[in-house]
Length: 182
Image 1: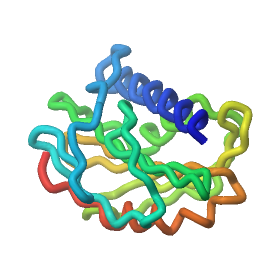
Image 2: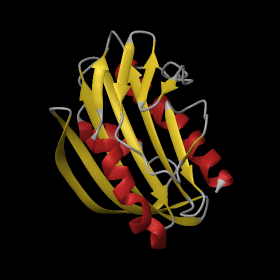
Image 3: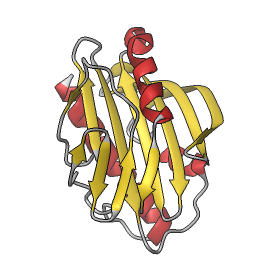
Image 4: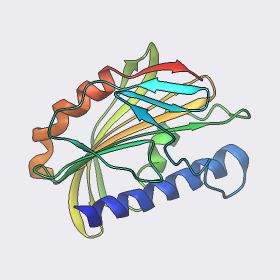
């Protein structure tokens, strides 16, 4: 699991570099994004704060430099990640393009579900997919939303046969998502 989590972290940095290229025309990692704090269910970084929904008791918070928040569940061999990218010079990139960038590094991708959802009174794009990561099969649920000058992406990744075990926890995390300040 840790090997897969490290790969996912590496993929996340690639995603951020790709989004940066779209937003600014250059290749740089957006903010580096080391977490500056998580108190209970509220993440904070300077003036920016957001809350996430309740996570199940068997999920363990882990510090990963490329994620604001990351949880792992060793029994499910799964990870839940939440990230934000905030820029003063933010350009309006469609949710579909932002979501497509989350797929970089994954092979044999098959989108199973892709639909609009409302999170924190904003449109968001929810996607479920199967793919291969580092040669191993995975199933993922992804959610991307924008609010003001920030992009928020959330992901649940596990082995395909474990997907149903933790996806309800992921739904609670995203259902409780609220931007408190930017």
